[in-house]
Image (cartoon, rainbow, N blue to C red; front, side, top):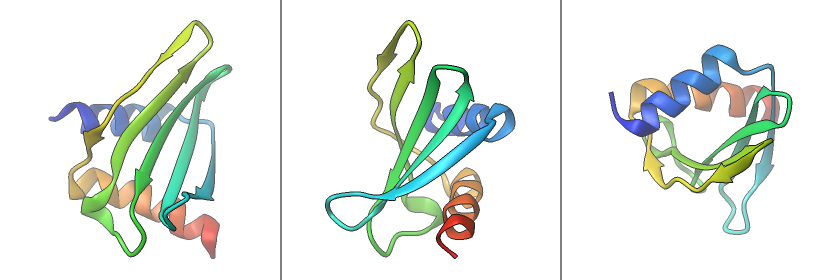
Length: 88
């Protein structure tokens, strides 16, 4: 499992809320709240799909981390379903 997949698995299995917003380039940014004060962000380009997600910033109550880790299509499918469901 890649780091991007591990971050996605954690977000999808422990997340309590999420939001979707557009990026400046027309893509999607998905923010998943993990626990109070912690949010993991994911992005994909406009017209992208399951295999195009990237794990990006982790905002934490004690600080944060910046990631640029690709997410494989099987885990990206879960992100895509969240993003598509909110956009509908």
